[in-house]
Image (cartoon, rainbow, N blue to C red; front, side, top):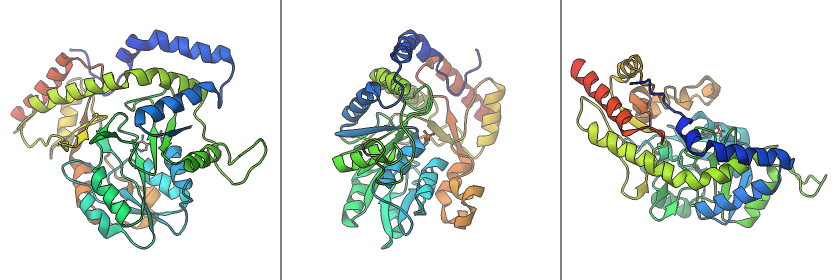
Amino acid sequence: MKPIPFFSLESQHEQIGRDLEKRVSAVVSGGNFILGRELEEFEKAWANYSGVPYCVGVGNGTDALTLALMAFSVGPGDEVIVPAHTFFATWLAVKRTGARIVPVDADESTFNISVELIPEAITPGTRVIVPVHMYGQSCDMTSIGRIARDRNLLIVEDNAQAQGAAWLEKRTGSYGHANATSLYPTKNLGAIGDAGAVTCFDESVARRIIRLRNYGMDAKNIFPECGINSRMDELQAAVLTFKLHYLDAWNTRRREIAAQYLAALESIGDLMLPLSAKEAYHVYHIFAIRSERRDQLKDYLQKNGVSTMIHYPLPPYRQEAFRNLALDPGQFPVAERISKTVLSLPVWPGLTDDQVTHICDLINRFFRDHL
Ligand SMILES: *Cc1c(COP(=O)(O)O)cnc(C)c1O
């Protein structure tokens, strides 16, 4: 069998490449590249898809998170609760506002922030909880919503890994006071460059983000505050509006692949398979398994033509960039265990059943031959 990459857009390009190129040329010949009709159209489409009244398109996911926090004037003196187990950018966005990063350990079964541990992390300085829907599975938004209401806190969802996911009847990105997503090319909904979006319910919040993403400008040459420059461009907006039509079908295919893995990898060696909460509609941005022999398994798969990845080998609290926070890794035993054992298998929608079977056979053989 041909090598299987960890991620590929080849099949997506075969499916929609020609139409996509037509959209791109239309934007090029239209000659309007920033803050035009394409962006308005995407913002409407994404708000509608997410089940919220407002969406503001921005430059990338990190800026989307930053702007969502800035919209509530989160800054120095405030504390923001984030998961210990997440991508670096979640923490970076909080850091950029000047607020204090307060990490909470992960839940062993879902990889998401531990809801039980959130109350202990709340102080009088706490303003926001940032739940991150890791790997495509929604956090427990019922419990997090209850905590936020009881303690008068804001919720800003990091929905970068979970476009199309849901908790109960509602999509992720519709639970928080403002919610950020990344539309980076490898996400479940991906642009052909950098892009991101914020969703929210409150018109005044949307207005503030619209201002903040455009230097802090209101009317032409009127600047009531200092913002940043982070606008989703017309090209990305046109591509995303078009691709959004396929998101549900692509997510369905991801779920089929996940189901195939779950069935074929049951009770093999010390493998731990991902669990999903019954309330969650998991869209498997990442299919993460765990094993004490993760590194050997990764090498074995690579030698046999299957590329995998680790999300993430070095958690944010172990990064040089956050050394000044002086966090003791011992505070996050679950995140520590995850980072040392987790392995992401290919799960992109273009994978065939035969390819998935082949990957499962290799994993079976690894545990048979290496016991
Ligand atoms: C991808 C990602 C981001 C950052 O998005 P960018 O568009 O790359 O800035 C933030 N948080 C999480 C959880 C992500 O996976």
